[in-house]
Image (cartoon, rainbow, N blue to C red; front, side, top):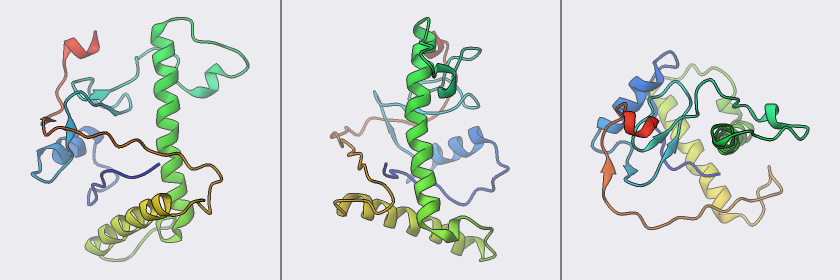
Length: 164
């Protein structure tokens, strides 16, 4: 429930893959350690370091309600993927609930908007880490921070190996 990377400055109409490519290519950009994975939706490529759900297979959590269990490994993976992405969406929801400035269009210069987004994300993380009880949520989910080596994935490219 913490933000580990904030990449701001792109307009909302930019394609997800273009923003990801830019984030990976910058010297201080996104670093995905080898052996770790970022969950991404179906609009991204399925490659090393990025896990997309199986296409053409049930995905949304609502599909598994009322005792309707997954019937194969692909549906099981998609159910777990959707569950983890739901936590990510919940984190964004808390951020917007906590900071009203993020809920409405902003007319500040783009540089100021970028600073506001980073400041709100950092303050969100500070509240989540330092307060024993988050005022907006009764359950605090602790994040395990393993030590990572410096071997990072430098690009997002399609891979038949990762698809299979």
